[in-house]
Structure formats: C-alpha cells, structure tokens
Image (cartoon, rainbow, N blue to C red; front, side, top):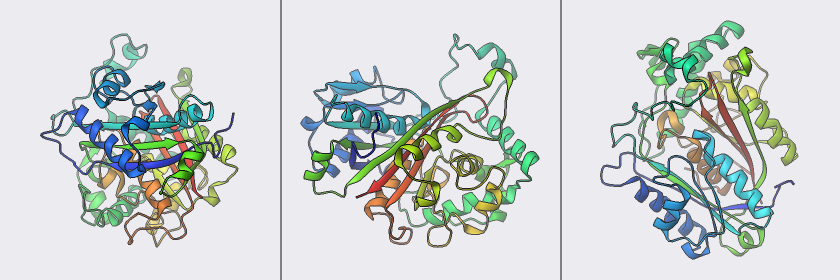
Length: 387
C-alpha cells in the first residue's frame, strides 16, 4: 500500500542545547516531544502512536511512554542507528494509512558529549555473527569511512579537495545558525590542511559530536488540514540494507542506491524535481555517496558535482543541509537522521534562515545512513512536499 499523501508532518522541534550537563536523556526526549507537540498546536493527550530507537533510555517506547504519560495504541522501536528517525516517519505514515494510529510522535535524543561517551560507544554484542571476523582487526568508524573514501578515489579519481567542498558548503550555512557548534567559515585549504584522523579523511571531514535531539509529529490528512500549520505531505519513502554480501564487497556505494529509487517511484518524481536535500553527513564522503546513489549525478561524478560551491544555498543547484548539518551544526546522540528531517521541514515551510532559505521550496528529500558505510548499514529516504 502506498503512503503517498496518506500522512503529514505537522510538528517539528530541535533541541537548542549542544552540551546537556544538567539534563538526563529521558528529559531531552521529553523536551523535544513537548516542543514538537506545541509546534503542531496539539497536546500530549492527542498522541496515540509513539516511535523511538535505541537512543531512548530504559525499555524504549515502554519507559518513555510512561515518562511522557502517553496513552498509546501503536508503538514502534525499530533500530537502524542514524537512519532510524527517517524509517520511523515512514513506519508512522504506514501505521496512519492503515488506521493503527491518528497522530504519531517520533523522538531522538542523547548526551554523549556531556557524558564523555563520544568515542565510548556501546561495546560489541558478543553474539553478533560478524564479531569473530571483524573484532580481531580493531575496526573503528573513521577507518571504515576512510576506506570507502580511498576506494572512491582509486576508482573515480575523486580528490580530498573535492570532499572538502562539502564541509565548505556546510560552513557557509552554519554561520547563520546561532545554535551550530562550528559557525566559522572554512576553506578547502582549511579542510585539507587539518590533521588526518584516518587517511584520506581529515579532522574537518568529520561531523561534530553533540548532545540534544529532536522530534516530529505525523498526522492523518484531515487532522493536518485542521491545524494552523503548513501542510507537509510525506510523498514517498524507501528503506534498504547493504552489507558484506558474502564477500562481494563494493565500497563505492551506499544502500541509498536502493532506498532512493523506491522513494522516487512512490512519490512519482525524479531527482530533477527536488529543490532541497538533507543528506546524512557523518563524514564528507557520506554525502558524496548519497548524491550519486540518489541519482543527482552519475556514479563517480560526485567529486565534480560538489565542487565550486554547488551545494551552497543561493549559489549551487543542489542546496544541502542548510542548518550546517552534522559537519557543523549538531549530531545528537551520534545519530544525525532526525535533524535531517527537521531542516527539510523548515525549508518546506519557508522557516529556514532567510540567508539560506531555498526559493520556492516545495519538494525536499531527506536521507539517513545508519550503521557503517564500510560494513552493514540501512538507508532511509523520505520525499516531502509542501501542499
């Protein structure tokens, strides 16, 4: 069953904090929930569906449902890492279309920065089937993404300078965001001259680490029509898994190669129709892969495509991450998917900063990557339309 125009995003809220020294994870989830509900002009008692992932404390939907005092008839705790919020919006739209709930809340929040846990992620699951094949080699997130970048360079001639343009574009946008962690403009030279974290990726090729979070409210069409908010329709969505494929490894593409076409097919659109994109930017190379895999340029042409400011709003033909994204603004709970949807909603509503607001922005795409680009990950793609 298609979800096209069967559900609408009616509320969105991003937590302003980037270091939550005095707030618990549960409180952060509650703060963003209240913010999104207020933005929609609703109340807690209106929520009958709740969606959260592994960043939620305790027993997820059970613990947070009680903490928020929700009366629920549909819950979903699908865990796909950084792409989970996009998958949750997709699932919420499906649930609404099927009559399982009327108004759904999606939350994400965390405090790895305040808890000094930025690089101390959860230890590997001792029962994970891949553990015995990977753990002996000491894999690290940045090393895996560096391998992907190096392979892309080898196959297609991509350069560090081209990757640097992605950070440059993000910094041009972040300067207008008072909450962004990194508001200073950077140049290509700044990026390529910053220290290596894992060759060929430099420090400025990496996202920030922050606390905070965000929330979204998704509602039935008739409810959306009754609210005093712009109508943001969920026009299409896609999900896809990419992994080691029993040794048939190709490090030059992401699962967005599969989730993107599914979303475009459901939406009845092509990449040429999209006015604005929110792309997962854990590293600059993550953005490059998505631009190619979602069809905005041919495979191997991403380096040329992002050069010379082509991602900068008002200058380039594909403005991206106009809040500064994970590269400059925030990456709450080490998961960047939620803020990608929120900034897309701002653009569609015409509520982005005037300096970065895309003119006549009626169609936007958000894409998330959860897991590791080099091993196994799930992509979630959303196409949204202002009606």
